[in-house]
Image (tube, rainbow, N blue to C red):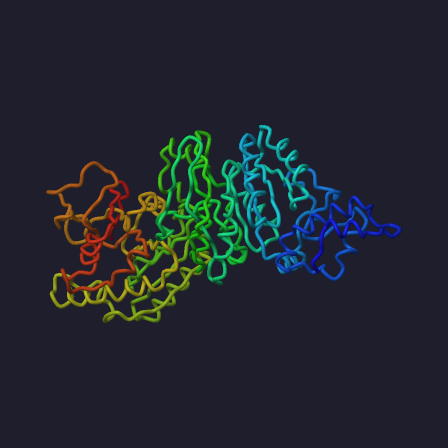
Length: 547
């Protein structure tokens, strides 16, 4: 139904109970410029005049009329349940709104808020709604927000909500829960959108596997210049900024508590954590030619992180990262008890750990003992499988026998190539059954990670001589004659797999084998790693007991 707002108002003849002519004219102007009508998604076409003429207390479910009541600023915890769309209402709205919700996340950014809001209102493709989510600001944020809402509420649906989280994660979670569009932008309150940012980005969601659309950055404020982040492995480095456009279905496909964890620290990049969760779920990141304007100023969270020299562990929020613990069991019954005691005491959260046990013993009675032990440890994500890699009991045979040593060398690649196939997380922690590390070893190894680090090992000695299972880039083993320097985290040429944290995305590029350039799988892996941009580290402060 095409109409002219001016013509509709001119011919309007109200019936008893209808809105006055001036309100009808204002509503007609709003409806005429509505994105949903121009996109032929408005379901009210057959009854448009009736809707425009309704009592002032009613309105279009997709827009706010000039005379509609607007929710007052309120603490998020006290928000009326009716303000939050039910799943049924949201499903209807999503069907009728193939559009974008923009959520401005702000904390004490009142002085920047006007520019941020006006950049949204100036979009060539207007969003379906604008949410201003205030994280306990103590400045003029609320006053400015309410003034701008009163001024622009006829242009689109605008809401202001207030809560207290102390981190963007909580504010973004509320914005995700309150918004109703199939696409969402979490716009930081000190940043701006380029005029065609939404129009350029939305069209890239035609691919059904695209979960996130990011763009280049244009700095303004204390620094100038364009920033281009080339697409890389997002597990290693972040190339998608916080204001990227995200598909709601992608957020819906991952448990909310995983994407928006509570208690995050200011030094932890929530957006990077969230985008990694989507990537692990299989969603693809696309790059838009639109421009996101990133304000550089001393009070920004990113600048604060730089001044504090936050570690990669904090920046990447690795404490929320799921890891896979892989334990190969050779059939040593005497090691099971100490292993069980360690797993009961170790400190990495169990809900962020996937435990995979490879029983290579080929002894059914040992397999039953393993299952009984691990069933008592209460790990929610546990898998045990049997694998025949060599003859039974070979692990405890004489390693100085050439035939035994050759058998063991052939067996190990079979174990660890399978381990990589079983790993579903970026970080793979390998723990052999005769190595006992400190209880907090998982976090200490994860703290050694960096974008260019593929392997962080604990320190442990050989069972057969007084050498460490680590060697220099020249291939010399650390021993009493070549002692490591002061106890610290340092690069090495390689190490054993007794207690090591690997990036599986790097390790999967390699096939474990025992032929070239050496006859052992672990030196061969590190020879290969030396040809890549990645490093291997040993944390000499983390010493394990080797049985």
